[in-house]
Length: 357
Image 1 (cartoon, one colour):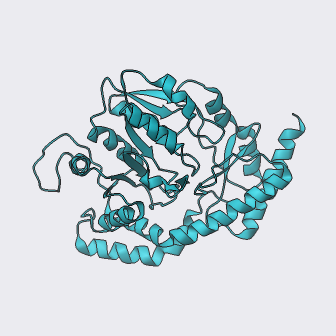
Image 2 (cartoon, helix red, strand yellow; image 1 turned 180 degrees about the vertical axis):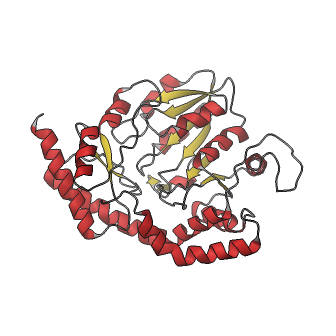
Image 3 (cartoon, helix red, strand yellow; image 1 turned 120 degrees about the vertical axis):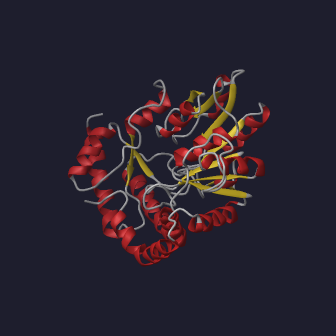
């Protein structure tokens, strides 16, 4: 089976470095003392140009704390994409706010022309979520948020290191929430997240919010908070990913360029992507992705259905992506032979589905 992530090959590649970090962590005797987390935070600050970076234990917690720190909650409305992970809905509800759903275009990202229609007197924030490695339309969302004095959260779980008109994803938004889950561009071995901000007051709030309302382990409680600390073994695995990222990215670009060239030649419909995407996920728009996924699996290739339903009501663009978008393996540990096999299998299933249309 050609797998989506190749976690086994990834672990073998980073094992020597990672085990050395684990040995160091165990000798420090406190597995969440922040030593390796701080190394990743400094890297994110340097790479993004942001003043502050703070690691969390998940991307969902990063999003939730972003709302808490800006006091978005009961009585507030938050504009979110209608096509995304359930985490994009859950953290808004946990904060006590009301999600307002925006439909998506054929890239899977927000239709920004709809934003004015979604605005009410209760709108407090907008969350720009970049899917498949594409950036959402940062220019329009930034102008919209500035015009109406809204909090602009950049959900860069999938779009980290992509660009919008030359602007790096991590430089966009009032605050950036990231995920380091094992299926993200810069993965941990397990879960992880991060928050980026230029606001020192917000950063200081986040430090307390992330650790049950206190700044460090034995400090007194000063406010409400959650357990959002990342263990250092997870942070160490992100550090391993940082050291491999350039190599991984080069390989992903090669794979996606090959897919695009071959599928264009074969007449297979790929998802439209922005030129500056980070090649995180390559998606095919099948007439029926559920049937396609099963047939492709029987032929030895694992695919991802991405999302099985809309977060809110069915909307034309969102339901089209739900029913059609299937992402292919594009991990950097694929061999050339495996990449070629994926193309042949997809072409076979595509032709079968389109014969009857």
